[in-house]
Image (cartoon, rainbow, N blue to C red; front, side, top):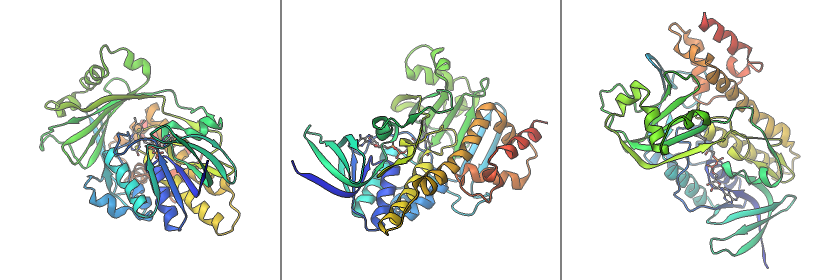
Length: 411
Ligand code: FAD
């Protein structure tokens, strides 16, 4: 059988894969991207952060995204019972984009993948990577939709296979996440929220359950009159509700007075109700001989701050910069130049996610007389600027500064 060769093989055409492909094409690399599904296809992860725009722009895909007509987003609103607060991401500590979009991922991922293809990526849908023998070159076994198989020799592999976590599973790199197992039930609704209902369609709405501080809902408006609606909790919480997933979702939404009011006229399940559980995951290493893990194929924390796609893009940018240096003949230390810088921002998000579920972060955001410059620093993190070490809450490696702020706001 003939063996196909490529400089770079990308496994998966989600946001991580497509942005990496586009960046590598800008360097003139030969890029083959294999995607086992047919696009457009549903995916979860619909609210972007302004930081992500920098990577979309750097990849040469900004015009594609802007012209797709997604819902403009400028911030986040939080509600817990009677308490409400909102962050406008344009009012933030770090320089850079203050606005972004909320996207139906079926369309968004297709826009990015087609953009990468236009820039010269060879893109195949329906082709599934079955096995990988790492090395330089690596050998990869692929199955076409008709069941036939072929072999690829790749100079470098980027695993962007998302929750499928192909290389972590094949190479036994998986390591446990330190978050408890949580799950989500979600769907799209045609929301019919009246214009005067006090609902800002330019912001994601994060609602804390009126009684359970670690249970929360997302409401993510789209530009087509629909919202993504979901609830996150530990599996034991969902088990208490009888019936189908839709019954559970409706019952839990019904427990929050504000969401009940907003969604009084909603048409439910415009897209089917779906669930996902145990999504938090980690790996012992984000790279090895001839490969690196991007996006969810590496580490995934938690959805509460909508950081997933931003982290996926950041990983794509760091990896493509490392590959550029390798092709320029330089020695690259992937731990120092890829893994450590990527994990630095992930660690910032982790501190905030932990503080969210412990309840301390909520004390901070609902505090009535927050200092404006501290709020701007928090706004920056919520906008995705988790790698900007000028921000004291990013540089706060031990988490001490965040704990002190929590204490101040608890007093
Ligand atoms: P994916 O988007 O999952 O893409 C991986 C692709 O690889 C898929 O298309 C798959 O078909 C393909 N693939 C897999 N295996 C193979 C194979 N063997 N061969 C070929 N192709 C393969 N993030 C946000 O930024 N904002 C949010 O609001 C947000 N909300 C979330 C809510 C929940 C409940 C969860 C669980 C996550 C959320 N996320 C959010 C995170 C977000 O979903 C992910 O971080 C993001 O999709 C990661 O992108 P990716 O490119 O790494 O992987």
